[in-house]
Amino acid sequence: MQKNSAAALSPQNQELNSLCSRLLELLLDITVTLVCSGSHSGKTIRILKRFAKPFGFEVYVMLQTKSVSLTLLYSADHRIQQTAIRHIPGLHLNFYFQNMLSRLSWEVCDNGMDLDRLDALYHEIVQTPRYSFYVIWLTTSLANMAFCRLFGGDAYAMLFVFLGTAIACYVRARLLRREIHHLFVLIITAFVSSLTAGCTELFQLGNTASIALATSVLFMIPGVPLINSLIEILEGHILNGLEKIMSACTIIVCIALGLLLTLVILGLENL
Image 1 (cartoon, rainbow, N blue to C red):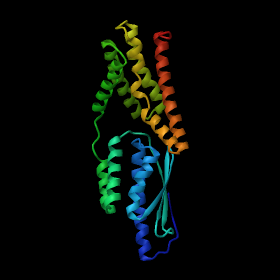
Image 2 (tube, rainbow, N blue to C red; image 1 turned 45 degrees about the vertical axis):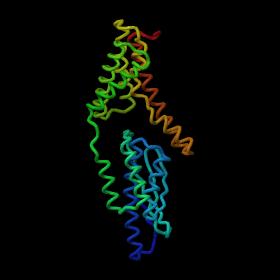
Image 3 (cartoon, rainbow, N blue to C red; image 1 turned 120 degrees about the vertical axis):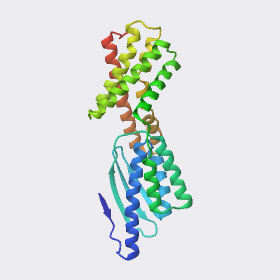
Image 4 (cartoon, one colour; image 1 turned 90 degrees about the vertical axis):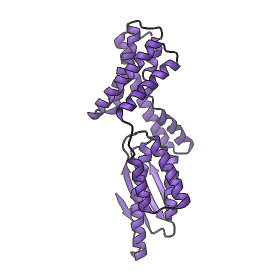
């Protein structure tokens, strides 16, 4: 949805309006990519301003959890302006996208760049092949196993945390493909992971069953939303910060429900 100003349709203004429209669409794509990749509001706005400045435009951004409203205003003639709104899908962390788009924004700001070249470089970045599911699956399981060891887990605890994480990640991927509500998926994922780790207590394997249970769900903790929520509040984006805190708390409650379900089923309320 766009709204154009009633600038005089001289050849120069037509060219500027065309540039504004193209730049606006590209900046909306960049905004959605940054937010979905885990960038907080302040960082996203700074990157967008660096992109817009060399083209002679000022950018005004209103970010929310599910949508972004972006206005481009030509610095030399405020009659030339356009506004657009775009939906923001769910969070898919990708620090590579954040880093590369930030570097690209500095290059554009310092040296200037043709819009066609900028568009091509942006699409080159976002089309970079991602790690396969199996690589993420393995490394996530190994990382959670390392957390278990870090908190003092023995060999049995580490083994069952690894297995629980691997099984839970697979189950989560399968459930998400069926478009099941993500909060229900979180509860099931936490339950599967903790239930597998709880076998160490059920079958009296090793001496650190409580550590296995506690660390079995650490891979699900929403660290980035929690950190970003604090940054948002400190930078003055209060509403965004509160939204992120509430979202992170909802995730934590779902994790707790899955873990509680395991404790009840295995009869480990007093563990």
